[in-house]
Amino acid sequence: MSDRKQKIDKWVRRPIRELAAYHVPDASGFIKLDAMENPYTWPAEIVESWLTQLRTVSLNRYPDPAANDLKQLLIQTMHVPAGYDVLLGNGSDELIQMILMAVSGADRAVLAPEPGFVMYKMIAGFLNMPYVGVALRDDFSLDRAAMLQAIAQHQPAVIFLAYPNNPTGNLFDDADINAIIAASDGLVVIDEAYHAFAGRTWMQRMPEYDNVVVMRTVSKMGLAGLRLGLLAGHPDWLREFDKVRLPYNINVLTQASAKFALQHQAVLDAQTQQLTRDRELLSNEMRQLKAVEVFPSQANFILFRTAPGKADAVFQTLKQHKVLIKNLSHAGGLLRDCLRVTVGTPDENAAFLGALRSAIHS
Image 1 (spheres, helix red, strand yellow):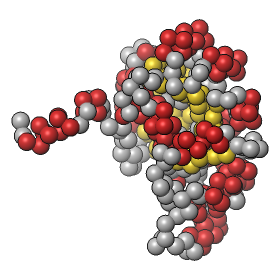
Image 2 (tube, rainbow, N blue to C red):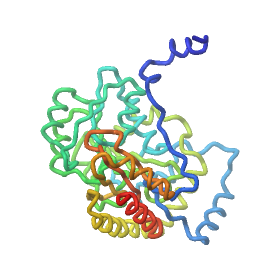
Image 3 (cartoon, helix red, strand yellow):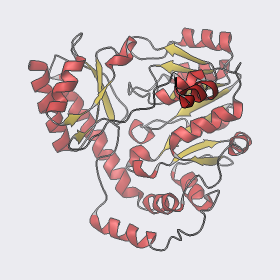
Image 4 (tube, helix red, strand yellow):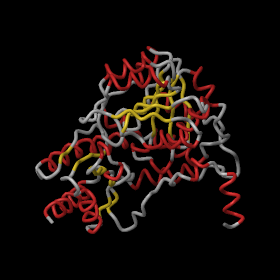
């Protein structure tokens, strides 16, 4: 064994060495329908106006450390309740990390339904916190009894509830969420990454509770490249999380671009409405194929299940047709034989449907 390997084995924690890094496949040359991105760009005249705005940005200066102007615009745009504030992160991932760093401890558990967003478990592992995954029911609804039992047993410091859930696309029942909040002595984070497509939110209900915050991102609205997430909550919570935020975490280009984009909210809203309509059209077309089971979605993606043992073959055939989606089958459990497709442009959706027909009939 080399000296370097010995040092790595000595100093890098075993749980980290046993992890696999988060893998993002190369999408060059593919119709990219694997990452829940908005496929639409801005009209040319808006791009020109944006570039004009960026020319005024001073790259030689550090950004506003609190991004105050952007925060105020987000508070207004996201309809954050009066008296509540927002904390910004480099995507939702950094916000999850901030929350867990602030409460971390080897005897403090993180709890979430499964299948769910993989970063809850990964970041808990980074921080050496026990992670408790509670299986959803077969229809991907919350198992209230199992959740309440797990809360009583593990007394989690943080519970994450994605609303809508990723990767299943469904909204959990409000009564189940209420029961979970009431049973929890720790923080409940309602992750509304796909709020723009859902038509429902917990944002206005936060003041009813003393242990609820709402997390969002602008990624799904068409701004994935900015890597901007926000955590809305009572200032008492946010002040504690802000203590573990790295200085200047939101760079000057992100701040300027996000402010510009939010001032053109109508463009983003029109794209979101188009994707919501196309989601229903695509779901209906997929249901006509009979050979796949299509699950309801309130997000900008659709989860579907192939015939037993066929998911890998369907995925590979789609790739041969230069269509890249997400293969979730290897996760096992409720996701066995499942694939997930992002809603794209009408042309991209048509290409996906054609490739899917070829895959299930080959």
